[in-house]
Image (cartoon, rainbow, N blue to C red; front, side):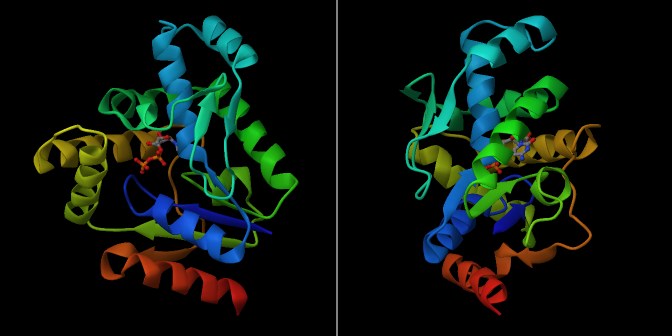
Amino acid sequence: MIIAIDGPAASGKSTTSRGVATRMGITYLDTGAMYRAITLGLMEHGVSFKALGSITEFLDTVNIYFGDSNSGNKIFLNDRSVTDQIRSSTVTEKVSEVSAINVVRDSMVQIQREIADNTDCVLEGRDIGTVVFPNADFKFFLVAGLEIRALRRQKDLNKIGEKKTIDEIKADIRLRDELDTNRDNSPLLKAKDAIEIDTGLLTVDEQIDKIVSIIKQ
Ligand code: CDP
């Protein structure tokens, strides 16, 4: 079974997807974390986002995997946990540029399909219901108002010791949504058959309950 959960930045995808996967006892795959890890790796290796040859070489040699796919707790880049580092503003500011690169998407989508072809899985991202698994058993598209999303993201940043104003965060979210929506390859888009859920109107438990009850119906 494939459950696709897509939506814009900070719309509540991670918390909801992880909760749904735990309740259902199936694998959780955070595809955004993969694009973030590649962004971090390219930056650390000083690879220009325009140098397609070097990017391809990096993708051919890099090893990305999740430490515990059920809880989705840790992501590893070449055997090093980069779980907190990929949430930093430095990575967040660049990830949309990297995720728009065709060779990066091809490589990540291949890994995502390999993982989910072999197991029941909740995948969260931007293009899961439209491109990665257009025949997913269930598709959800999460949305929430900008103010709520910015407040959530501020809490996440506080946890890793970063301080940003709500206005700065709103600007970051707006820019990232714009880049993700307007790219040519696999843009952020609600699949025609996806069920839209406004997470601004619900508690985390209610969001999870709603999705699980739709799946179990
Ligand atoms: O958690 P947040 O909403 O901040 O974003 P994320 O899910 O961690 O994704 C980070 C970035 O990766 C997005 O802004 C997209 O540029 C990219 N992404 C993508 O292109 N396709 C996906 N399936 C997932 C993420």
